[in-house]
Length: 208
Image (cartoon, rainbow, N blue to C red; front, side, top):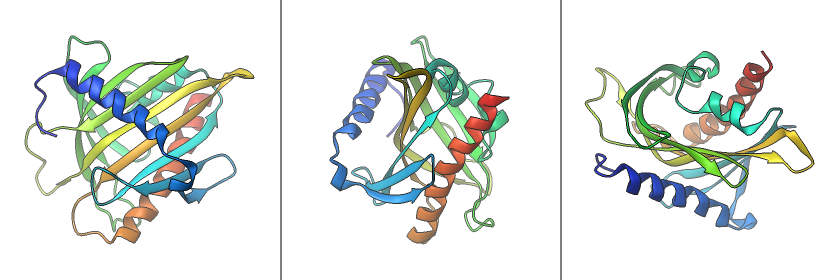
């Protein structure tokens, strides 16, 4: 996806794409990793040669507070162990939209070196909860000696449980092209583990 020419069109398209991922049937997903409180599935991505991952788990808090910790803002860098730097490099008049640049830490004993990403981010209402989503865009040059990864449409849906409004169902759809010369098995292991770790880190942060 190239540079941003119309924020409204991009945010609407991104929103529609994320919602469409709920349309995949259960038998199209394969379990990639499962713990007692998080399940990660995967299916071939329609965007690139890798996988679209779906992660789901219950988080003890209301959607607004949870999404405040996920979206670009003052909290994210403090708790997300995979993210080492984050800067909002451009803001837009449309509420909830910005461009963020961030670095991720090396993974699997640095077999996967740190990566840089530049994403358009959009946070909006969804049903009785919230959606925070993003997609990589071309914006400036990558850092020296750093591989720039690419996020195809990704996002986090957060909705309160019907029987307990103080707990929320957090569902993520992630499809990241890490680029570089990496075996697919290494990427698969890293993605599934990092998504489980995301929930662990987030839950700890919300309890503080």
